[in-house]
Image 1 (tube, rainbow, N blue to C red):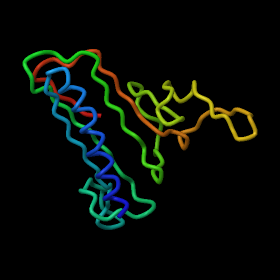
Image 2 (image 1 turned 180 degrees about the vertical axis):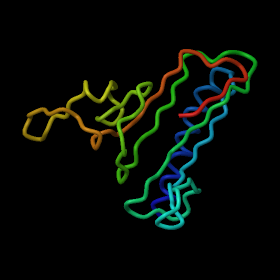
Image 3 (image 1 turned 30 degrees about the vertical axis):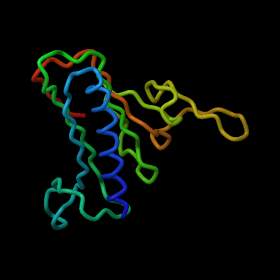
Length: 148
């Protein structure tokens, strides 16, 4: 059930971003995937497998791949990935990503963001507070691909 919600969320996200590129008349192909890092035995090296059954404590890997299939560059291309409510990031996002801790209203580096508690006091945001990740590309040339 949980993985179905994650897959639906990622598929919906891909459609939203793809519609933005299509509205510009520039076809950007997006593919989203959720995989689980699993070890067959205690001594085996973990490997990525498609997420069929996810249980609390599993390490998930979310990937969004993009490819400019058009003949023109796409300017100001942005990928926004919401973090599902039951998912906590294992480590701080890569330097190229911005984060939001308030439902995608404001963006920045985690160290720059604060959380306002119910009593009005503020505190530094932590990795557990992240609600969205965002990657911005000033331009994606025709035929170019990448992933986040």
